[in-house]
Length: 243
Image (cartoon, rainbow, N blue to C red; front, top):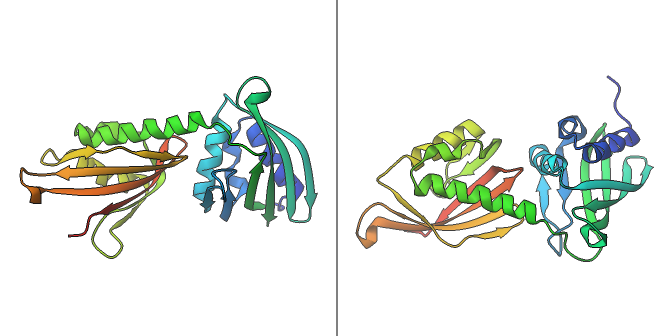
């Protein structure tokens, strides 16, 4: 099968969003793809790797409440520039204009750097989705109900446990992550108490207290950093106070 030209890749990439066709994305994204989102300032959230970029763009493409409008496309060799307008509501205040600078190599996108006009794009739906997933995740441990974890974990999810030092046990893949969390959630000897969480786009910062007895020595404080994209957890890293 002949390698797609830069122009062909960019045309198909644009149609993913104009037609909400997320299923066409995998063949367009390179293994080492790097993406920088338009926010937050000053650098924009950076996403590295094919699976992570796919998860981010799939969530955007699947959102039928928004509309992507390419305004101008320029292609020069392996480089392409897309000027666009992103509609997320009604009227002039319900859209933002921006530009994405892309690089294509061997028929796939390997870099995409996005910028917009001054001002944040209201991503309330995305933030609400992150919060909703986090709340359900916490409830699974708080209520000892592993069933709440169903459909919350991405196929390429990665967990880094809080121990042992220096790196913590690493688990890769949805099945391995689900098995680990189901084991913990089902353990009624543990009492999990989430503290006030912070949401930063697709990143949830969740402090917690874990208790297994009545004494001061029977509890542990820690924090989970969870990356949530497309309504599913793709990454979770745990840290605790040192003993």
